[in-house]
Length: 133
Image 1: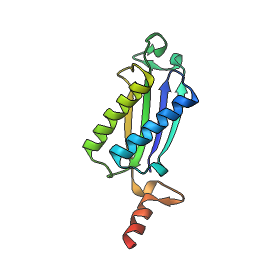
Image 2 (image 1 turned 90 degrees about the horizontal axis):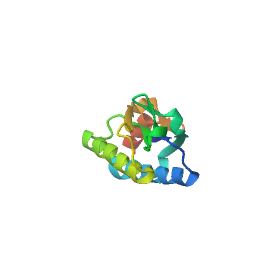
Image 3 (image 1 turned 120 degrees about the horizontal axis):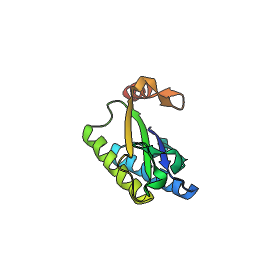
C-alpha cells in the first residue's frame, strides 16, 4: 500500500507521467512486493528554472532530476530490497527522462502500521484481522 510522490525537474506530458507511474508501480511490486492495486503514484512537473542543485538551475545544465518519496509500512522490507529499489528507480527514471543529475533522490519513508492505512482501516488493523482468519 505504498504512496509514491515523485517530482520531476523539467516539464513532461500526460503520456510521460503515465509511463513514470507504470514503471514505478512495476518496480515497487517486483522489488518491494507491494500490491499493484493499492499502489498510488502522484507525478508533479517542476520547471527547470525552479529546480536547483548546488545553487545552479537545471535550466542551463542539460540534465533532468527527480525526487521520489515513497511511504511504506515499517519493517516490511529488508535493507537489500530497499537498496535494489533505489537503484532500479534511478535506472528507470534515467531511461524515461534522459541524462539525470546525480543529485536525483529516492527517499523510502517507513510509517508505523498503526499510523496509516487505506479504505478506512490502518495497516495494523489489517494485520490483526489477518491473524484471526
